[in-house]
Structures are given as C-alpha cells and as structure tokens.
Length: 357
Ligand SMILES: *Cc1c(COP(=O)(O)O)cnc(C)c1O
Image (cartoon, rainbow, N blue to C red; front, side):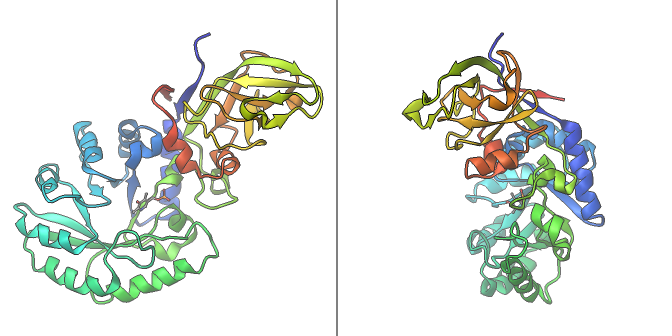
C-alpha cells in the first residue's frame, strides 16, 4: 500500500451547513468566509460549491485570495476583511470589483484617489481591540466617506471577541456599543460570525459572516457541530501501518512520555505533524480505529503516531483510521491538543492527498 494519509472533503456537507446558516438567519445576506484557503478546505472548490448553493458573497483576508476567486470565475461580491495593506492595491481592487473593509483613518484618505465607485465596510472596534476605528473616530470617517463621490455604499461592521462563550457579558457590551455608535448613520450592518448566527439572533442584521460553522464545527466550547445539526466537511484519514504487543512498563515514542500500563497492543498510524496532525496532542487524544475511539499514546512524530489498541484488540495492519471528521469531531481532537478546530484544519500540509466528494 502507498502512504494512506489523505483528506476527503464532503461538498454536500458544505451545502447542508449553508442551509443551516439560512435556517438560523433566513432574511440575511450570507457572506461566506473562505480566507486561509477556506479554512484549509480548498478555496476554489469550496467557493464554487457555495456559489452553486446560493451564497451571497465571500470574505477573504487579502487580495491574492480574491484574485484566486476571480480567476476561477467567481463573480459574486468579495470583501477584503483587512482592507488594503498599501494604497497601490487599490488598482487591483477596482479592476476586480472588490469591496473593502476600512479599519483605519489612513485608508479613508487613500480612497480620495479612486477612479471607480466602491463599496466600503467601515469596521468599528467595539471592544475586540484588533482592527477597527475607535468609537470616537467613526463619525468623522463616515462624514469623509459620505462626501467622497466614489464611495457608493457604506456598511458598518464589527467583530465579537468572546461570543463563543455563550454567557460572556462582553458580547452584550459590544452590541450596545455598536448600536450607540451607528445611531443616526445610514447603512447596513454586519456583526455575526458563526457564534453570533447560532446564539445571538439580535446580531444578525443585514449580512451574516459564517466561517467555521460552514465547515461543520461548533464555535462554542464543549459543543460539537452535530449539536447544531452541522455536518463535518473535512475528514482526515489514514491507516494502521503496524500493530505490536508490548510488555507492561515499556516506553513508547520520543522522550518515553508513555509507559505501557500492562501487556498491551499498540498501533502505529501513518500520520504525524508533517501532515498537520498537532504535535502537542496529549496522551488520551481520541483517534478512531475501525470506528472505535482509542487514545493517542506517546509523542506525535513527524510521520507517525501511536495509539493504545486495548479497546480494539482485533485491529490489524491496514485497518482504517479517522484522525478527525466523519465519526470523530475535530472539536474533540482540538481539545486534546489545547487548540481549536480552526487551527487543525488550516494546518494540514501539502503532502496530504485531498479528494473532493
Ligand atoms: C473569520 C471571520 C469571521 C468568521 O468567523 P467564524 O468564527 O469562523 O464564523 C467573521 N468575521 C470576520 C471579520 C472574520 O475575520
């Protein structure tokens, strides 16, 4: 057998998850987040599938991602989430008909030189304190944009810092801050990412901006996608390439971080951090062997991991393994590695074969 490490991407699951977004936000426009290669799922096939399923636009992190979409024939609106990094990008932005986030005063000034009309999304910092105009800067920026004949539409947006924690009061504070700032200013609003879409209906406004839920994952701690009737899009698979029986007390792997608790079968799987499996995954992180959850043991190597097969004692070389996806939520694996599914998905490396279903 050739190296059996692969990713399958279920495009039907993606469409299903878009339908779930629509059910949660039935009257909103949906701007699908496809930044970072569609969270590692492949920007072109994901965008094409979402386009066919009736999405209203896309959000990307930079102009190169927008170029990829336009070159693939995507004609829907595309929003540059961080706007332009330098003024010279405006030529390409206009040529491709992109929409831009304006998050800083210098960008407002730069728009004076525009030749063609443009739609801008004024990003307001309501407490995240990453990108965005500070509350006291908004009125002036809005006035200047309004008086720029080339700015045809102005939307207002903000981003939540803690909406993934359902009871965190920061979200309510950000919402009321936003309402206060945009009062009296005309334009559509956009606040909700996946957590907002699922748990904060008062944030739906005109445009919703789903990312992780489109890929089948819950944005909330201690929940998984299936709790919201979402389906996993990415399944990361491999196979057992060896099974050995070790004696009680024997160490496993680099640094001997695990010792066998008894005489036991140990499986070796062809996946490692060189494929994007998280090196920090701890002993006990779940791995699915033959559909049965078994614990990771020992350190993750570049090309291999080892698992405790006591609960799957009939397992043999060649048996199928799911690292995350169908049958094993990426959220559970992320928890074992002190990270989030977003990072797992965007970490899968080039050498892993991808198949689109
Ligand atoms: C990435 C991103 C989102 C999507 O967030 P999810 O938690 O993946 O739904 C929404 N809005 C902005 C501005 C983003 O950068």
